[in-house]
Image 1 (cartoon, helix red, strand yellow):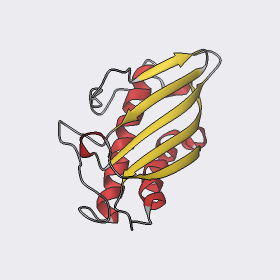
Image 2 (image 1 turned 45 degrees about the horizontal axis):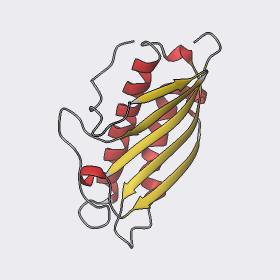
Image 3 (image 1 turned 120 degrees about the vertical axis):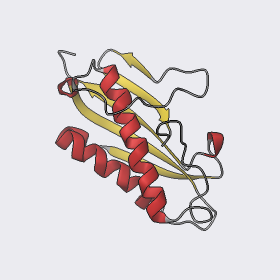
Image 4 (image 1 turned 90 degrees about the vertical axis):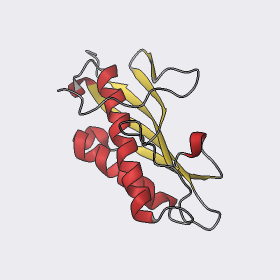
Length: 145
């Protein structure tokens, strides 16, 4: 399986992923695509639909990093254990969970039951570079990985 696109480069001093045994930690990744970053605050600059589109793109990027980490073979993924979604949200934006639902749905769509995960969705006062949405994940790799 090949990547549909390259995920955005890290914007700081960190690795896109780190592996320890069968545990793979994926760093927070934005909704950038081809150098275009979805920016703004949900509930002020962006509506729910725009936030969900940004979350799906962030999930695409997360999966692209994961695919690279497993050598292009998603069969090496045993389980997406945990996803944490961050939404740049106005104080009164109460649909943070609905934004991140779009990312969760895409992960399950692509990985099936192995993509079903525990999750936290957090509203934030700000995110790096005014990102609208970022995601991070913890993945368990198959024994043979």
